[in-house]
Length: 120
Image: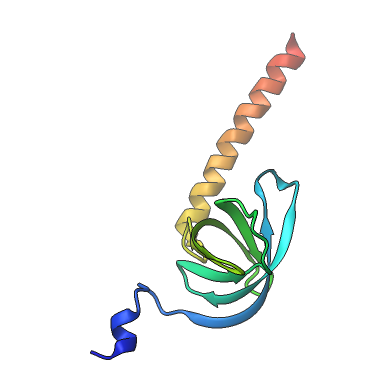
């Protein structure tokens, strides 16, 4: 076994990237730009330019992929941080269908509440 294979701990193949990304802070009141240096279906390495007040959980928007990922910080070695995606990259059709059904249920509940309030 080579040294590289012995030290590689990733479960999935990583791709070296140089993508623009945006860290979206919880609540949507703040964001900061970053560079996505490595990307896998499970996580990424981000260069945040020394920004050291990033929260432990945030969303990462990557325009080149046309996706936004829910992230948890796994490690910090400024200026870089490693994040794991809470949901795997590229949501499957089943996941999207489940999300749509949940939103439809919430919408029906809200409509019922509005109707109840307007009839009072």
